[in-house]
Image 1 (cartoon, rainbow, N blue to C red):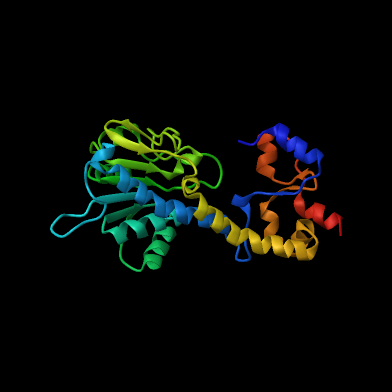
Image 2: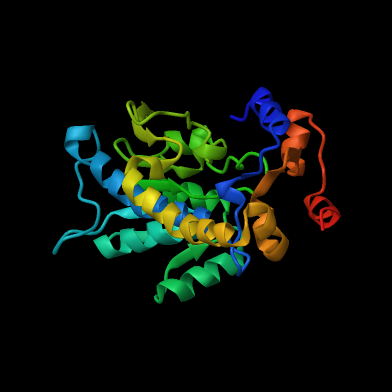
Length: 278
């Protein structure tokens, strides 16, 4: 969590600072967020497979399917990047995948991107409850632009799930989508509630640090080289408007409105700051 004392000290030292999660590229997308989402989405199925085993108090089933045995059912809440890569991994392992999201355009994009028909639905409580009762893995991959992620799955719905099934709440970074979710750590990643295994570790990509670091470097290295050629980030921000979205401190001025509201500090418009120095 950001400390207002640290921000004030950075302001005093006239630092220019960028936040990874708000950094945009030429196309207007968030490249680092996307990379981390791809890692998290791919990792959740590996995590779920681990905890489905008998050794980890799971149901003792294989994530996927083999000849003559019905595949396990995976429920994914959210059709964004995390949901897409979770679905890809689960399908490649042979699991049966069902995806819920209230954004129909995201569901359409997911169908087109994966290239095969998927079972998809808007989030309808009765239908979701029915599907959760018979699934082995439930993944929360919903995101919120601002504030807390909405709670979609109630405690009552979790209590009706099969004992030994696994919940992986990727949305725990912003509060979690399951009412029963509580933040855990890499050292103690799971807890049991109603016989259901809960994995609620924030920042899942941190468990795959080398891959995450390389993905971040792929985005930042060209940016740093370009900043060096242009005489610094401040000069680069004048030419590349999309870069400004990631700047939250510019020469000591706080330029992120939401951060200024949260920390009760003075906000200054970045575009006006840059224009005034030209």
